[in-house]
Amino acid sequence: MTYSSAQIWGIIAVLAVGTFLIRFSFLGLLGNRPLPPYVLRLLRYTPVAVIPGMVAPLVLWPAATGGVPDLPRAAAAIATLIVGLWTRNVIAAIGAGAFVLYAGLGLTALLAG
Amino acid sequence: MTAHPAPPRRLFKEGAVGGLPFLIVVTPFSMLFGVVATDAGLTLAQTMGFTVLVIAGAAQFAAIHLMTENAAVPLILLTALAVNLRMAMYSASLAPHLGAAPLWQRGLIAYANFDQTFTLAIARYDAEPALSLRDKVLFFAGVATPITVVWCAMTAVGAVIGSSIPAWLALDFALPITFLALIGPMLRTLAHVAAAGTSVVVALLLAGLPAGVGLMIAAGAAMVAGATVETWMQRWGA
Image (cartoon, rainbow over all chains, first blue to last red; front, side):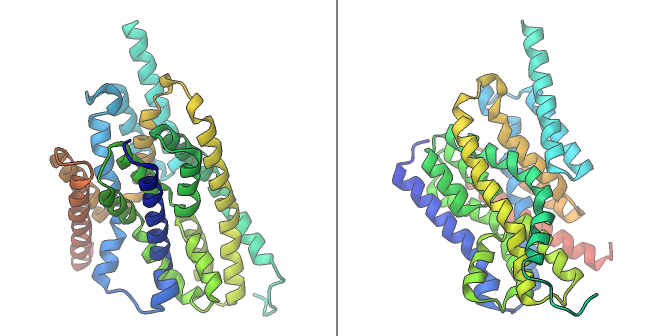
């Protein structure tokens, strides 16, 4: 990370103010005016539009292996997604992913050792 | 249903008890943020500033991730704020219930307006619309207080123990797993799946661009894809 301390605090400050304004928007300033339906429709997909695109490269080209695809990490990613879809439970999905990751890394170390 | 006003604080207690199950999620998630943020190079004060002032898990993780890639500052801000845009919807949904509260109360509610508090509060208000404004505010405060305190405290714990975690624990992959775990439960409809799929494909195709640029384009395309598929589904009554 190459940011100066001032830049980091700047990022924190802008995110803090921006996030607060998003949360405060209708409650505080805009009253009860409804949003246009198409805007609401776009907003509905923001988390699911940002997060998958961020994760996909991390899964396919993990930094820890210098960007080389890694079977334990790929298997852990698939397990996390499947358990999350199936149980709708974030912690269960994290648990499944961690279990598969450590089992995979352990097996790889055993086979290599 | 009784016509008598609820005794003072009853709704606060009800909210606090209702929010307790969320602590099981918030505790490890906030610890992980402390670990990941200090591991990325943030000081303890910066990590705590992030968690106390921004108080939005997914956006915090997104910002830290882009910072480790040395992305341009405007892209970090845009991406993290885009992750939080859904909270404008929460704000719009809460406004009919809480819009008449005093400004300082609405300010505090906005600060604590995140996934867990919103979900519980709106469910309670919809179940009993006749609740007084005071009771609605108390319920929200009841849900928000323990979650906010635990979120901040456990981030500090994670930040302090973070540096003593050995390499074989492969914490590099904690972030992708956390995000993937968040995505699974979000894929509720075909439109959500279309948005997620578009995001993945476009982000991978544009992976060669400077850090954060491809993701911004992918997110924009994915939002349009999700909204478009939703429009089709409504038109065809699917």
